[in-house]
Amino acid sequence: MVPAHLRKTRELLFNGLMIIYPLLAELVFRTGAAFGPAGSWWEAVDGSQHWTQEPPLEGKTIWMHCASLGEFEMGRPVLEQFLDRHEHWQAVVTFFSPSGYEPRKHYARAKVHYLPFDRPSLVKKWLAYVQPDLALMVRYDLWPNYIAGLRRSNVPVVVMGMSAPRTPWYLSRVLPLIRRHFIGGVHTWGVVSEADAACMSMAGVHSEVLGNPKYDYAAALVEVEANEKFTAWKRAQQKPVLLVGSAHVSDCEALNGLDLREYSLWVVPHELKESSKVREALMQYEASQVMDSTRDEPKATDVLMVPEFGVLVSLYGLADGILIGGGWDKSTHNVLEATAQGKIAACGPNWQKIAENTELVEEGFLQPIRSHQDWAQYLDQVGTQAFEAQGKKAQAWMLEQCGAAEKIVKALEEAVQF
Image (cartoon, rainbow, N blue to C red; front, side):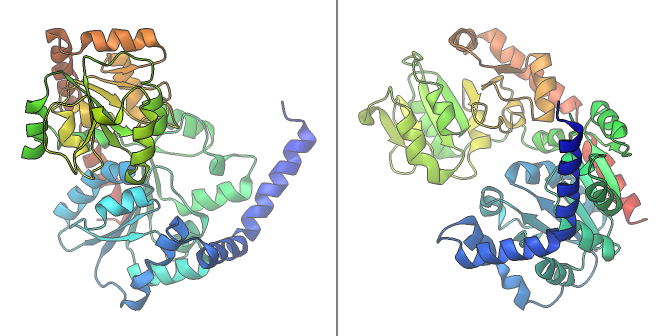
């Protein structure tokens, strides 16, 4: 337990930081933009400020911010339902991460930008450009200067898809200045479950259980078909396909030592720039056993590397067994994309941070891997009729969970008093 005097010191430091944060953010982000190395996140964000030369947007505008691609796909059904119901509104979408911005920068339903640095001067310019009437923040990526700017502009902020297994640091009672800043700036805290609402209530914050719109997103993916190129790759295989989706180096390292001779291993890297490292992590395969979907013609192979954007969801439908990446890193990536294709997936041991994963594991629709025995049990099921039937059951269960997008849209409408 932290001694009382140290807790008090920490409290003073954090509250003091909130007071000087605007100045500190200005200094840090200006420095990063000036000295960020070529090809870095700093350069990408700083170089994307063409909006500063454009006239302010006119008309009713909803601004949705997402940290990365997963958050975007979570918010997408909400944003599109809102726009369908209010055709005179337009949308702006921002991303913190290149892994979200790059694959969705041409999204047709909105203007897409990197989130400008959380500098007071840039926040002011950004809000003057967008002139939002409503701000939708997906899950966690809340920035103090933006929250303050939106509050000063009387723009309602709705947070959606939030899961709170513990009190978020910025709502802690021991940080009253920070806590007051965020509570005052957010109109609606939309959480996924009753357990999340209970946690927020214990923190003294009222929230609304609006559900998990990832199910609505995944429902739109049911029966998505792969293109002819990958269908041809599937036909060419003489063995079942074991697909590693959103693969990290650590996921491939976890495969080392397994006997996978009875499978054609297809690997889709999470980050395309990490493709070579992901390939090198598969130490049990010689170069002659590995093919590349961007260079080679379809034929039987032990390993197929798929360093391509936008194909993963459709590949789940072709796979016989699936490993969802990220589980030997910080957290498993989106499992519901595989569930939507009627598949039972495996994942690494770090799956608990994703709200729907708890339900999937409890229902038997996601199988965590902690040991070689777990691997053996999973692989023994692949290709069996029982395994395929369980996948169809998982798909049907997932479709029954839909409806959160509608609730969140109603919360957005209430926030702007339709």
